[in-house]
Image (cartoon, rainbow, N blue to C red; front, side, top):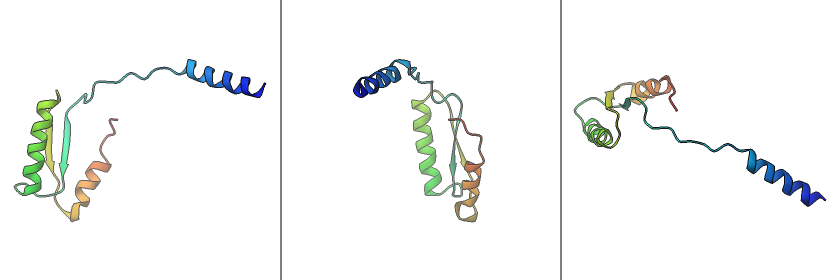
Length: 85
């Protein structure tokens, strides 16, 4: 009887789950935050990566340099950004 109840509970759980539908990502522009000053290797690399992502995704990729405080300025900008999933 116990096995029947466990099997019934599992079956009910499988039948009631709604399927997840993927959303189009990204839905708006992407901001790539770089923790170094413009013109250096990190900035150049980020711009190359941003360009390639922009070609692959239908949204533009904006490279934003936030140099200073040992990367804390960039980290604060990212941590306080509006969450978008």
